[in-house]
Image (tube, rainbow, N blue to C red; front, side, top):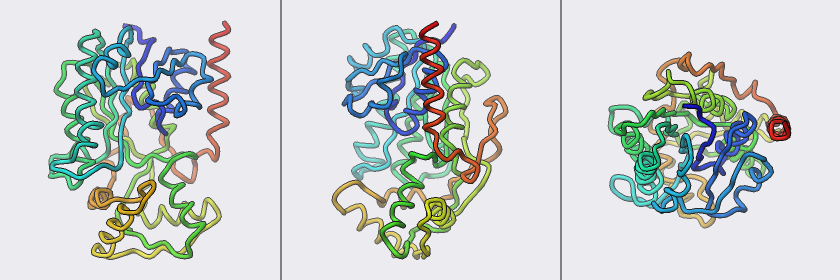
Length: 318
């Protein structure tokens, strides 16, 4: 079956904005639900993208959104939530119940193709240290146990010019003389947002990727300490980085979680970093990727996004 119409849940997020722009540039019709249209300003100019105000956690709304679609891509994910056993209501809703609802909506609408975003570290057999990873693992299970033509992606930390990871560390270094860092020696293998987008776009109609789970990671492994230093250096505001022992690191996470405003770090983030976030091997060849490192990434992807917008407009005019 030719895939031409796609529902993208989580399409207004960091990765979602890039992926929706890519799908639109490829001439595909994309439906993007959002709670508030203001969150989708970057997507509204794309001529083949239909942004709809809807609650994807409501089964009736999800059924209407799925109607007439050929595939669903689920990118929904949260980093912070209220605590609970095994992962609290926020993680349960976003990472477990929603994939279950999406599987049911796909079945009801006759949609066979489902691409699902998980997380590196959520696919292992060992006990998982954080609510985030435990909920991601249970969300995977809901997809894997379905009879759909699913593909699961497990990225490491995703970076790009508008990410909220490296940019956060860069912004902090503009205002403080020293960075005190919990889990400073935890290793990460960051993957560029363009490579994640390419993996999804390439897999969409590729039957070789059906019922497969893929790790997505970049070509280089860094400690968290090295990433923070690199972020500061790239933004011209490098500061000394001091690694904290775990006792102080846990206390720091507790204090940051309790502060008003956006959560910079939580106890659950601290628990997630108990294990390295590194791929078990190279990226699968059927994804057709040659991942780039932070040092080799384009400085400003807005140029690429504008090129994609121009391409999509040309397709519509033809």
